[in-house]
Image 1 (spheres, helix red, strand yellow):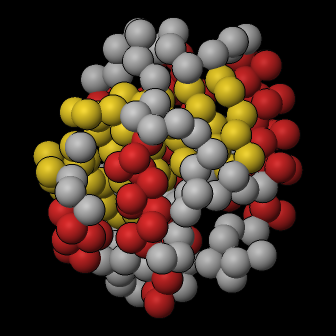
Image 2 (cartoon, helix red, strand yellow):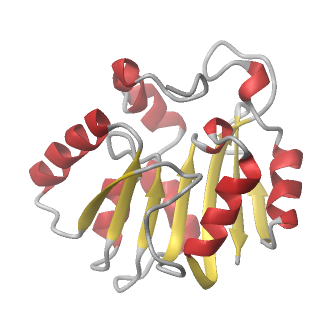
Amino acid sequence: MNERRFDPSKMAKLDNPDRRKALPPEKLLSELNIREDQTVLDLGAGTGYFTIPAAKLTQGTVYALDVEPQMLSVLKERVEQEGLQNVHYVNGVIEEIPLADEIADYVIASFVLHEVEPLSKGLQEIYRTLKPGGKCFCLEWEKKQMEQGPPLNHRIHSSDMEESMKQQGFKVISRSFPTDQHYLLIVEK
């Protein structure tokens, strides 16, 4: 296992009341204006923190990609409990997304790009899978010392992430700070 990858034994941390209060997924996703016929790719979908709300916003396909079959299994149970029919499960890594070119209107990369090695390869794959004019939603830990989140040396500063996105051809639409620990970049292909 890549030392940067999230340990699935800690999956309860992914969906807890404190996290939902600080980072409400429905509110954050409203930044994208997902329409009912659009396709979404959720990278590092985990237990469905963003997958499920996205699947409720569109009748289009929501691809939930995760490297951990255990996470996809939990996600599948949650999706079935919600009665959603539009989620497709993809086992794979961000550095080699096993999907066609220009398949998604939106890509969600929530707390996952700091795990990608090299980051440039992951961003190239996001760019490849986005349709022209498609947008990527990148939510990450700011690179500063705090109790929660990945080690400081794994984090990517918001300015560095923005620069990396630009180098891959993305246009930065917005950069915001939903909390003092996190940043949200919206970029467009």
